[in-house]
Structures are given as C-alpha cells and as structure tokens.
Length: 225
Image 1 (cartoon, helix red, strand yellow):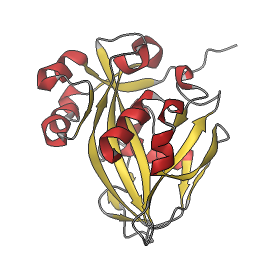
Image 2 (image 1 turned 180 degrees about the vertical axis):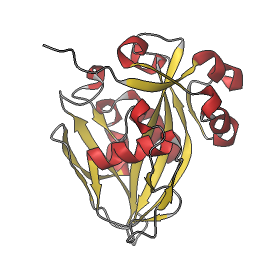
Image 3 (image 1 turned 90 degrees about the vertical axis):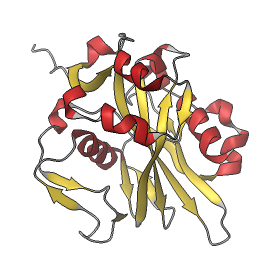
Image 4 (image 1 turned 45 degrees about the vertical axis):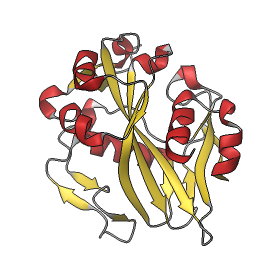
C-alpha cells in the first residue's frame, strides 16, 4: 500500500519572528510584522509532520472570525466545536471562533479569485483575478471554501496577530487574525467536523471562554473585552 502524500506547509523561522519583536498574546501591529513575514523571500514550505514538533519554525495560520452587528449594534460571532476528524488533533472537542488552517505548497502560483480586496460576495465584483496571488491569501481562500459557506455580503480586514507560546500547539503556530464583518448571520459549515456551529452573542461567548481553545480566548479578549 502506498504512503499518503506528505503535506508541505508554510513556515517562517521563529528567529525571524522574534527579530521583529516577540510578543505573547495578541498584537494589532500588522504593519510591523506582515510585510516581513509574508515576503516570499522569507517563506519556506516544510513537511507538516516534521514542523508540528519544531518550535524553531512558526507555521503561519489564517484565523478568520465572522462578526455580525444587528440593527441595534448588538454583536454576535460565528462559533463551533471542533470534531475529532478536523485538523489539529490537540484541539479536538474544543470550541472555536476561528476558521482557517495551514497554507500548503499547493497554494503557490495558482491563478484564481482572491476575495480579500473589498466587499463580498456580490457577484464577481468582490473578487480580483491575478496570475500571481499571494500564497497566504490563496490558502486562506481555499480553507474558507472548504470549511464554510458564506451566504452574505461581507467586509474583510486583517486586525492582528496571535502568538501563544504557553503550550506545544501555540509554540509552533502564528495566527494572522482576520475579521469578516457580514451583513447577515448567514455562514454555515461545509464540514461534518465543524459541529454545533452558528452565531452567538459576544457576551455569551465571553461568559463561557473557558470552553474555547486558547487562540479564541486571546482573540475575543483582545477584540471585544
């Protein structure tokens, strides 16, 4: 029986990240970090099974939070429980507010629609076709397409970075946090392993943060507390 193909995922040297300014938790200083971390000259793709236990490398992970504000200004966020078959095994059964995953070497050099330049989805107008898309943006688009259906217009922006060196999972990952502000709470799961999903008032999530993975706790406190 042939071995399954090895996935090569996007990483940067932890030393590079530390040189820009190490932090624990959340930072909004996107202009300080993103130009360097997403510079193709600093990108590497390594076998995922090797880097999962290597704190000398940081895997760059898009972490997308869907936010809805109703007519009264009340805020709700899309949240779910991670099933046993989803992604990082060390996070199974925890609740999360973030959608995203690893950027793969297969995301490099694709010609496709990159939906992060403006509003969407409003027909094709919210997407731009480019022959050389940023592999991070392309990987984020792919992850979203695989995991959720977004049945509403939205506005997208990168709001910060996440780093948590307090546990083995966090030591090998670095999150790039994006807010997708949706006109309607019309986001639904496309994966059987994204369960118990839906929009929930921010106040309710904040009151039950101990049920959520560490990245969700850090993000919610930084953005809404």
